Amino acid sequence: MVKQAESRISMSSSPKSGRQEIRVASILVSAKIADDLPIRQLAGEKFLGTNPDSRLKNLMGIRVGPKGQYVSLFRNGTVSIRGCRSLQEAKRILARVVRELKRHATIYETEPKLNVQNVVVSADLKRRLDLGKVMASFPAEDISFEPEQFPGLVWRANNENVVLLLFASGRVVIVGARAFVRARRVFQQLGERLTEAGV
Picture 1 (cartoon, rainbow, N blue to C red):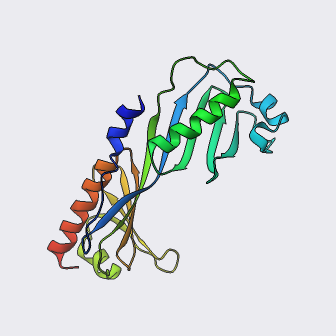
Picture 2: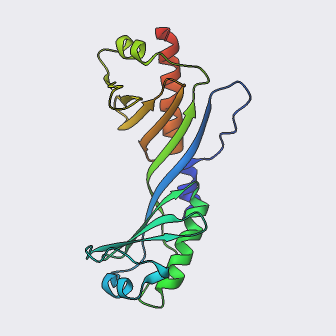
Picture 3: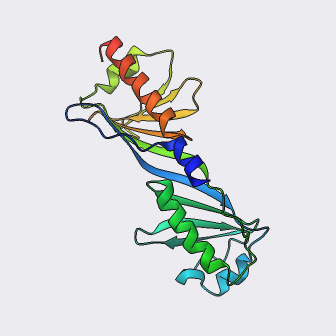
């Protein structure tokens, strides 16, 4: 199941010197592991050494692993993991959480199916951008640039449900995609359009 999901966020993006770079910065995945989870009981027992917010009755958050990835446990039996760089890393975190949860709840015997909810991609155009010119060159696009509030230009890609954050350094952050290949396609289209516009 992980292999099937892994194909959606292929990590094969080893950039060559002088070329545009693009890589996965973080992924958000979820999995259904039980019919329900005893959130109050887990909170009272400080599950995995975490002291969760007692005001949240339907979910609790914990930090797991050497990098402290954030794991949300929901009363309906769903687990979400954010902060991993790959599905294999998320699988290891989930396996640890499931192993500990089996002491407190009835967990499905089948291997959980990881569902990719969001892929955050970091990219570099390898050249500086005049964000004012970018804004002026695409007036009909869904673009906003308010440098007094945020140093980057926010560009919502048409028909993609993906948001790109462009910075003057040429760095680009892409959020909202559920597959790395989709984010890479949007990034390639961005580079082509900027080149055509001469910005």
